[in-house]
Length: 250
Length: 250
DNA sequence: CGTTCGATTGAGGAAGATCAATTAATGTGG
DNA sequence: CCACATTAATTGATCTTCCTCAATCGAACG
Image (cartoon, each protein chain N blue to C red):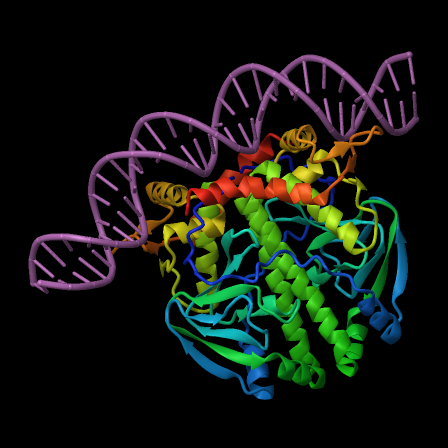
């Protein structure tokens, strides 16, 4: 997969330049939830699931701490990590469609979620419009993020996808006030590859290349720890991958 | 892009076998909308937009007739068709995140949408829970579809992606009671390629191959008309593409 | 009737998958 | 605590898929 004909009815207008709306969590929402509902905190250890595909959908969840992956399996057995979620993110939207979850949500390390009954959320939301608005906004961001992934998968070469993955992770931490210069990937290369649509070998090579180009650095302890001295460097790296493709089209 | 290590924490459980929930539209929703709101019908010709990126989000829309594409552009100018929508589908969810659309919704042929003010929908929804439930279910299906696309892009070779695209189109028509044996693609090869993450040449080759294998047939008039004698054949074709990859993993 | 745009098809090349071997981390039982 | 077993990661060699470039053909349109 690589850049392809970006000729889809050229619009000459300058655009507002959409990128994934990473400014997600907002303690305002949490405050609203706390105020109107009795969110049940629930602790989970690595590997435990918040919910599993096939279970009845009754609750939505907001990540309180830790990080979680959302895994989907298609009818023919293809399995894929479709999302990685951090503090402030919601989990469980995949149950809205038909009252049954169709993904697994799994803790990647020790963490906690606040669980909210959907029926109570609906009730509270109809009394308190701001709550319903916030809920819908979260849904909208979820859609935007999925589409941003889709875009990355379709238009970026593998190196850039890995770079963007790291940038995204770092930005997620940053927007939540966590330190971003050193991040611990709680996924194997195989999982990252699955998430990004490439093989584990390609992930490994991409990381090596990023390290060689000084865009990232590996900590001494293992190669799961990645140091990101400058997030901007990651962005520039992605830009450099996109630029040549565009140049030829102009 | 091609099948890759599908080793993401193997779960031994038999799964409910999720596939895109194509059973979308439901005239029930339309009836609800008609009953509680004053949906404004709006006619559009090919190329006209329901809304554009950057515009304020005020309305949601339900496709009444025709087909529409949703196009997204990233900050660095990568452009992509992120969705194709038919009768009964909603448009406009991309405005929920922050009150501004970040995609264009464009008519691919003459068609019409019913436009609903979001604030009125909220108000009506809090009086009539069934309406809000239906709205949320539509959002959930939207998410599920995006994830299904993501899965296809990541795990299927290009031929199979084209096959699935056609199957999806045919199924969309079928679930809306339209004839499915003969469909008119209202997209150029370049657009299909953009949507599926491949070049127009690859789309063309894939279609030729599908025709050669008798899975589809071209009508005499032009190559935009595609006959699908048997939707099952398309599914089997996709299966055949997935099977070998899985065989080696077992 | 020529021009233009979209589609098809072929040849060559590059990105990334696959296969395979090695090395580093992690975990386990003695 | 250490030897061993196991799993994860790296790196190289090769092969496949799909992209790129280019030529041709057909359909639509003025």
